Length: 588
Image (cartoon, rainbow, N blue to C red; front, top):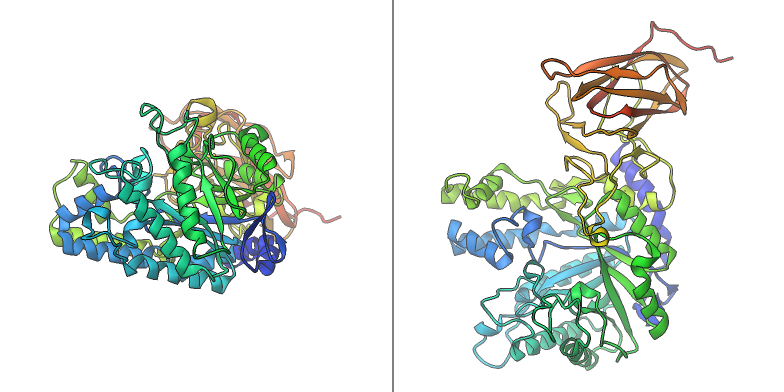
């Protein structure tokens, strides 16, 4: 299927929401509304742009937070070149094309994770009691607001890294533990308050600023330091106090914008934060790696009902396509807006994937102690190439993720991965199965990671390659290949391929496989089994083999072909269609 057709399919799903969105967002009892009534926010967060979390750059093993990454780059190429890299990063990672793409896919909101140090100096660098304001962050925010306004989608400002850092989860707030935290420093708190007042002053009359999400994922043990992330906190008194002070500062210059607060424990512990103190306020919760059922969100529904306040799923994602679809279905059923995380990173479980160039991978290997230090010029050029790779035009579009969070939330039909027009010798690669929900486009024994609910992680995609479904895909060493094959196939798992035949005809179907143990599969065409089950045995030299099914009947138009593992233990590379002695079926 062409990219143009794909975009048309996705944009039609949410277009009505975009067409009517206008006016300031505000809290109206349990709902978030604008001038046209209730609006369900559907969006993505721009993680990795203003704040680099190490995992997004495959740096979790070598850096604890952005400040640590910066130190390593300073040492590698010098401070001047490191600044050139970060300037290129900020100008490349988010552009008008990113926002245009989000709008074209049907989303109506964007959450901007801000790092305070792009807007103001750290307290230890201030020479007096006044705050020094930096143009960089405000100019970037002005630009993205301009792009959002042009697309009529809301921009939600999110203070992701507060002065000093707001929690013990170091990467998410870029907290340097050698310096006072937000909670240990009155100066850091005052700078946070002043920053929000400055932002509110600047954007007070901008209706496409959707809300002020004033502190991302605080996680701190106020009563008990051993409760490092504040999940057992009963009072949250310092958090509520700071929230009220920030609210007062905002309201001194801006009476129009909705304010969003987050509980302790990564946004989810609201003990002690009630009663609320502002009429135009919403609660945010974050949801990762747990079940998508009513029980998982009942606490927040209770807050909505008890305190007559809107709730918003401000951050979620980092899972399989099946999990994404189920999560959105749950939110929409309960009239809760949602915001996915993130739009792009190095990895395929987001709409845009940033390619890791070899030079940057060599730098990572050097930092891991696996290879020698690259020359400064080579390292700098590699860093700049990596920065350029963050541009939307250079990203890999993960259409399956987009389909899972848009079309698949509206219907359960499949659509083909490609054109799949069957002619003599047509090859369809095994990893190019249909787009669609689990149980409809494919079946796999592990569909998502639910470790928060189960206390045990599930590696739902063993290969972690190419696509973000539960289907286990690995790199392929066969020829021909699209670079990937399906592996780790278990009993009862299957893949569906929608193929188009220009006329009623019979084909011989060659299935390219490699058996790792005694295995078997069967082919189902248009819900009918085609021939007997094919028995597979490992080759002596572990090579790829072909199993041929003769005279598979296809009718004119679209056909559904399913490869079902009767007994797992094999890998699939491709299906190849060859005319069956040029026989054509009667149309009578």
